[in-house]
Length: 113
Image 1 (tube, rainbow, N blue to C red):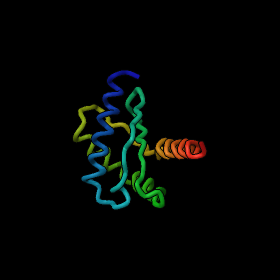
Image 2 (spheres, one colour):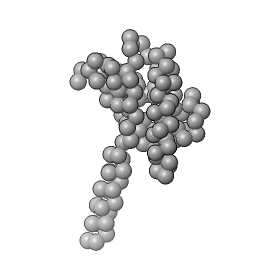
Image 3 (cartoon, one colour):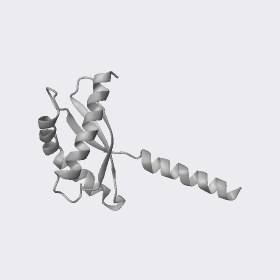
Image 4 (tube, rainbow, N blue to C red):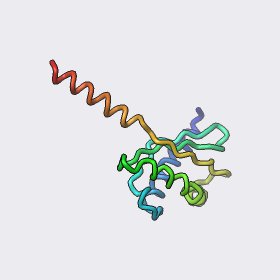
C-alpha cells in the first residue's frame, strides 16, 4: 500500500470520527468508534471499521451508519482535498472483542497457577 493511500485512510479515520461525534443527530450513532479505514488503491471504496459502545444495539447502529453514509460522504467532500470521495462500507470490528476474549483466557490461566 502506498503512503498516499495510508495518509488518506488516516485522514478518513480522523474526519469520520469527528463527523460521527459532532454532526450526526441520530442517537444510534453517537457512541461509535472508528478503529480503522482501509482504502482501495483506486480510492473508489473504503471499508470503515467501527466498534459500538452498546453491544445490544449493534444491529441498529450498523443500519443507521449505512443510512448515514451519504451524509458522511458529502461532509467528507467538503473537508478532504481529493477528487473523488470513496464509497463507504461500514464493518463491525470484532478485533477488540477478540482481544478481550484472549485477555480473559490469559487471566483465567494465571488464576489457576
